Length: 447
Image 1 (spheres, helix red, strand yellow):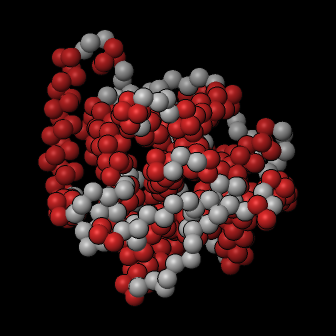
Image 2: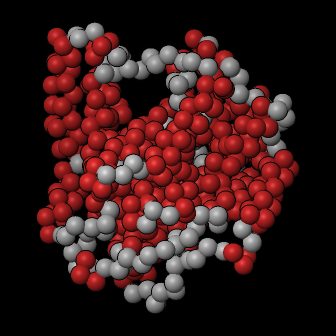
Image 3: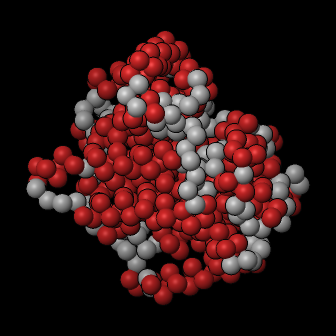
């Protein structure tokens, strides 16, 4: 890794975020500045991956000049669609932040900076990166295409051909901007995603609850050492954590104010989730399920919510079908359910639950006890509706271990804690909104 590589990748990441802001400004009504930065990073990642896929589909080799031209075209289209005089309303200016808020925010940014140093020094080396995400990304970068052998060659079945392609396409696009595959420089994408998640959680809570609540929630996210660690650099867990937070905050905003800006954000958040990992689509589906009870009470069809959540998943599934065709699911043994094989299924359920309770829950006993204490002494918060989808997602992860085509205990030990940690920003959202000392004076500005 050289100073030039670091400068080049920082320029590429900044350019992508700037292009992302050109999109975000179209649906930024009511968002805080921190949230706009977070959404810009997410949209920049989607734009980079999309531009890379389009260039390769057209038979063109992705490169810095082509990316710059594409991002400039997006900026020009945004300027025409929303001129300065027609800018959406933003959150009113707030008073100076309390000292406690500044201290908590400073610690959060320090944690992000330390993770950035760690990521740049260590690079991308984990088994999942080498076998799955980095393997696909480097193949795309070296060939300048999305070769079909990534999906139908039995020799590379270890790379999970069914997985979505946002992470590999993003890494290959930034490598193309560097004109080199530098794993240390490319690793800086992950601290940026951590910063985006911190800003999104803190900005949302500051807007909907209070400044101190926002700083507290952002601090919780930044200090999640189990998620933001070197072993997750180069994989999809850190991007997935941002995707969960994007969809969750947009969904909460849409429940409070069903306007076009919140709808657009939910659309983008759902697309980001679906394009990152398969469980991203599952989480969006659980958000949709959580929208059903209010619909029953008010006797109306949630057309806006349905389109914003279901259409991105359908479009993404269609795009994957065009790129790779049908790929069999080798990780899940569905015959355990559809063949009525209860004799084998029930022992698996007992083994998985026992392992989760005696190993995973025991290892997380201290933080879980702190969260339980906060729940007991605090009032209901504006992020509480996320509790249902959060619990359903965790149960789905446990079910995936039960139905694993491999050893279910190995599946729990190797994956359960890692993938559930990506849900921690949702826990931070709920916990930050329930701070008992702040609930009496909580403010919830409307867009």
